[in-house]
Image 1 (cartoon, rainbow, N blue to C red):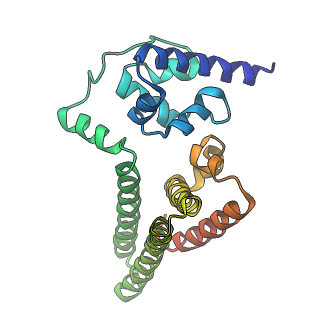
Image 2 (image 1 turned 90 degrees about the vertical axis):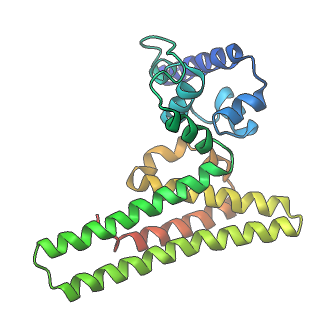
Length: 229
C-alpha cells in the first residue's frame, strides 16, 4: 500500500467513526450533509474522496473538525454550531438540502459574475476608458452572462421533459450535467484540481455524458472570457 493509499484509508476510517457515532442511517447521515446515499457510499468506501467542503459540512452539522477528518491532526470534536449565528445555522440547513443547494450555488455563481462585470466597468472608467467603449464591453459581458444562464435553463427543461416522459435515465443524466457544470463554473481555474474528487463528475462517467459535459463546459468558459477577471 502506498503512502497516499494509506492516507485515504485513514480518512475513510475517521469518516466511518463519525458516521457510526451519529447513530443515523446511511440515508439520514448522507442527507444531513447534502449527499445522496449512493454518493456517500462512494466516499465512505473509496471511489470518491472526502473533499474539504464536505469535511466542513460534517464539522458544521456533526461537530467533528474538518482538519481532524482530513489529516488526523488536532482536536477531534468541536461544540456543534458553537460559532454560528441563528441566521448562519438557518442558511446551512437550507444550503444542504438536496434541491436548494444547487439553486443557491447557481445564484452565487451569477452574483459573482455580475459583480465582475460591474467591477470591470468601473475599473475602465477609473482608467479613463471612453464611456461608450466601457458600456459596450459591459453589454457584451452581460449578453454572455445571459447565454450562460440559458445553458442551465435548457438543461433544466431537458430534465423536466425526461421526468414527464418517465425517462429516469435521461432525467438523471441532465441533473448530473447541470450539477457538474455548476461546480465546474464555480471553481473555474481550480476545476482541474478538484474534479477527481467531485462525486457528481464521477457519476457522469460515460463517454456520451462526458462528451456533452466537455462541450458545454468549453462553451461556458469561452463566454466567461469577456466577463472580466
